[in-house]
Structure formats: structure tokens, C-alpha cells
Image (cartoon, rainbow, N blue to C red; front, side, top):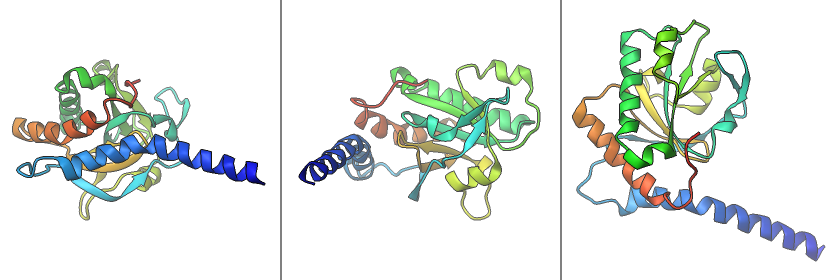
Amino acid sequence: MPIRISGRWKMLAIMLVCSLPVIASYFAYYVVRPQGHAGYGELIEPVRAVPNQLGSTLEGIAKPLPGLKGHWLLVAVAGGACPEECQRRLFLMRQLRATLGHDKDRVDWVWLISDEAPVDKALLQGMQDAVVLRVDPATLNQWLLAAPGHTLAQYLFVVDPLGNTMMRFPALFDPAGASKVRRDLDPLLRASASWDQQGR
């Protein structure tokens, strides 16, 4: 019996140590950050954990959504037809990631397609370094959260390496807005620099 108890305490200690970096990043963002900086993103409380469900690649290969864990994610949601406004959102997300400089490889950009509509091959040519998955709308609503009267497609979501959706930004923003998004992301990336994994 003492051996079992000892094993459980060791397991709990390991889980605590593994979660400390994420806790530290939240602390750095919400407590330590300069008081003069008003956050641009909206905090999602409580955070919403990645569901234990499947998505699929455009080739129809099943992908467990928990497999996205381990990296910071910038997530956009849109239908496969992706008209001009949708394409602009994806372009802004790609550009935002590029502005992170040497940190960009620590952040995956993800397009979650909410229907079965075909995707223009020309659009995919500019997304070769993105994660693109089809996901059932009910599963998306379980993981991501829009404000009342809004849709998931109107936001850019930030997901932490534990798979928790913890922040959202307006999906369309001007250069000034992009700078504010960057200022919100920088403390999180800085606080987690010593432990998180490189992008996929």
C-alpha cells in the first residue's frame, strides 16, 4: 500500500511540474504585464479544453483533435468555400504569425473547416505550412466560444499548449489592431520560451 501511495504522489508531482509553465505564462500575461497596456484580446473564462473528438484532413484522413496539443495555436474557423472576406482573415492570420519573428515556429496556424464544401486548390497553395482540418460544427462549439450574437468565424482564437481555448480576437483587424494582438501574444510566448515545443 505505501508503494501505491508513493506512486500516486509522484504522478501528481509530475503533473504539477508539467503544468507550471502554462500557469506561469498566464500569470505573466494577466498579472505581471505593464499596467498601461490594455489587452486587445478577450479572455475566455473558463477555458475550454480540446474535445476528445476527431477531425479529418482534406484527404479524409481522421485526426484526433487532442493531437493538436503541445503548441500554441492561432485558430480560424470558416466554411470550405472561403469567400474573399474569409481569405482575408486567413491572410491576416498568416501575416500575424510572420510578425512573431523567431517565435513564429512556436505557433501553429490552424484553419478549421466547418462544413463539407470543397476548398479552392489555389487557396491551399498559400497554406502549406498551416494545419487544415474539417471539424463537425458541434465539436467546434464544444471547444471554441463566440460572444452572444456572433459566430466562430468572426474570431481568431488562441489555444494554449494544453489544448485550452483561452483568448479570442476580432478576426479582421487593421495594422494597429495587429500590433495590439502581437502585444497580447508576446508575454505568453516569452513566459513559455523555455519549455514549449516548436511548431509542427
